[in-house]
Image (tube, rainbow, N blue to C red; front, side, top):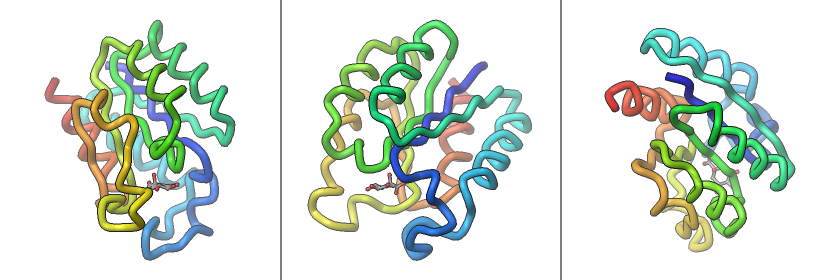
Length: 141
Ligand code: DQA
């Protein structure tokens, strides 16, 4: 099973962002863990990150042809990007929404997710382990 893991805006700054919410792993370290966990579960994780919304949408279009499932952490786009939501709606495959921090316990505006109802599962507030939980969920599908 090919799982595309798409991290969005500002997630390249992991390791420099507030560790209270995002922990201390850098993005390359997180990607290393995701790839390792996927391999243990017999999955293939392909990880990308961008700060450009259009690029993120393009990768979702690519997933249409090339992925069996996607894990998305769109960062702040989660809260307002209908373009990303529309692109996710095209995917006829399991979508898992992951957030390192517990977005529902933070500022009011972070409690809105415009992608939540197109995802089969949302994992939040579990740090990097949230990606493992998402992979485990997909491995069982
Ligand atoms: C985030 C939460 C978002 O509110 C925030 O804008 C991010 C990261 C998370 O992983 O906790 O950039 O998606």
